[in-house]
Image (cartoon, rainbow, N blue to C red):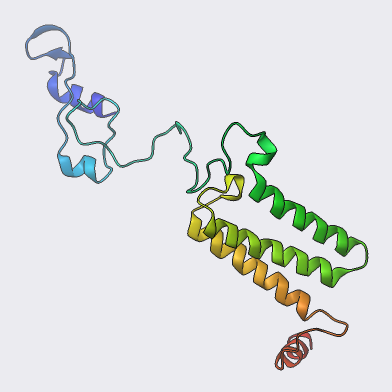
Length: 178
């Protein structure tokens, strides 16, 4: 569209260029640096010295691994062994789900909560955790930690005979249920 606009300004009313007869060849006008730096223009046909646009490309060329998302062990080891942090968290979670399904919900939920807390600790301590790294290190630690603590607390206050008594919890539940 910009080429059409620039071409219309360079050619006369009959479509001829000012140099003489023949079709008009539009020459791209240089854009001000402020427009391209602010993301106003595209840099697809820009000369090598021009300021690049800050827009995201129309087609993604690749994805970047999260921080610490490399292999947990060297490449000479088999694939499952390279992903041991993720596999250990998944194994503990599966054991918790199995325990919950076999009539031990408190123990199963505790196991799942502890597995998520362990995932947060692994994400913090290890420089490379493989597929356990999903987002940035800080976001992964907070997400795993908050979910792990929440599930563990819910398992501790689970009825019947809760292991942890929270004084205002019964009043809050009665107030919201009524």
